[in-house]
Image (cartoon, rainbow, N blue to C red; front, side, top):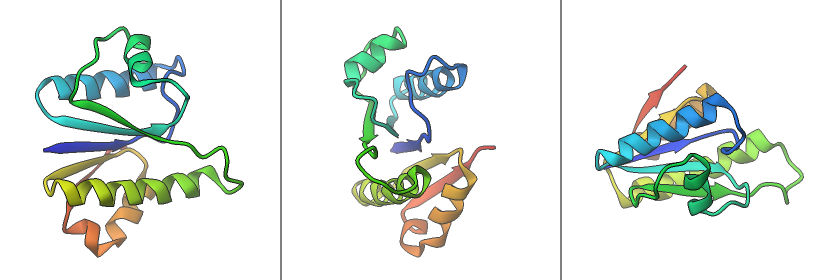
Amino acid sequence: MQIIYPVNQKLMSNKAHDKLIFNTCYHIALRGYKVILIIQNTGATDEEIFRYYSLPVINNLKFLKIKVSAFKISWKFLYRLIVLLKIFILAKKDKFSIVYVSELKLGALIVKFKVLQDLVWIILKE
């Protein structure tokens, strides 16, 4: 089973919240689940991200990095569109996906698509 967690913020920003997100995903991955974090591209490699949080690299935690700086439209609009496409692609590969969403507008957008409703479970976190 894979857990997809789109994060609408940059990791490695020296904030407690991004450390909480990373550590939570890391420890879920240690339990044997495949965790995919969809994040903004900071230019850091996967190894650099793990090193930043002082944790060893593990295979069950992957990053899908979104680069949006080249586009001249709203980051939130583009983020939601790209995340929606990424979730669809990932859910097609593994039909037992969980999407952990902390942004309610993104969760509402996912729920509107009948195709995704059949493929994923959605957990909304406030």
